Amino acid sequence: MTASIDSTLAYRLAAGVDLSIDGDAELVDAVRLAMPRLFRSGEGFEGQPHWRLQLEREGTTGAGLSSRSGLRPDQQETRTDTGRVVLSARDLCQIFTRGPAGLGVLLHVAIAGILRRQSMLQIHAATLSRSDGASALLFIGPSGAGKTTVTMNLARRGWGFLSDDSVVLSESDGKFQARPLRSHFRVGREGQAEKQILDPEPEFPGQRLSSTAIGGLVFVEQSGAPNSRLTPLLREDAFARLPAAASAFGVSEEARWQLGFIARLSRLPAFTLSVGRDVLSGDDKLERLLCDLPAEARAA
Image (cartoon, rainbow, N blue to C red; front, side, top):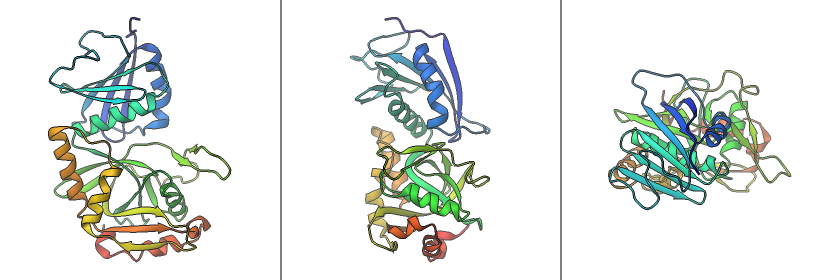
């Protein structure tokens, strides 16, 4: 089958990358529908990098594309159950897939790799800041840990937010800045197996942040207890937990860069939040608990 390349899409990530997306027309059209639901769009800024994202059917090889059996020295491949992503050194990322199903996973793999090439780290964390302008907290944890529940609780208390699950971190002079990656919340409803997609703008108008400085790390875990509990976490324990929350490691220099980034990030004040049933009550117990953080974790 010959790949069609008569469809093109431009998309600007709030995380700070411009994408031009082309290749197989059916795949591009699927991405056109998926991008606004998967990734937050944003405004450009000076020097914003530009990447070409090329979509191809698995088994086809167009001009300048690698085949499954042979990668060029400048290319790095990541394989999943639904296809593969090939990053080139010249600002080109290729996605090979059998069809539109599973494109979401491949897009996340591709964009995580692109961001890493730009010295930015994707991390699975909710990010919120109190209304008094303090630095934000990263609420880190796996799916089901309670990140969205914490986000909804604090947003109802007036906290500003970037995302309930996925943000991008950059570093300058030892300071960490976060931008949103995902656009919507994914909220679990009682009696429903799958999470529902929620646009937070109507419920929390004016509370979405475009970027924010990070002042501390909060590792979220479910406790099942009546009351939530916040405990300090040693730096070495934070360092041990962070890799599981970050995007998949690259190779060689990229892997070393990512490990160094995580090591520096782990120097921030860190805590464990054992989420209790009180977080579901909607009262101010969680907010009062977080107000007890050391001043250095709350400093603007």
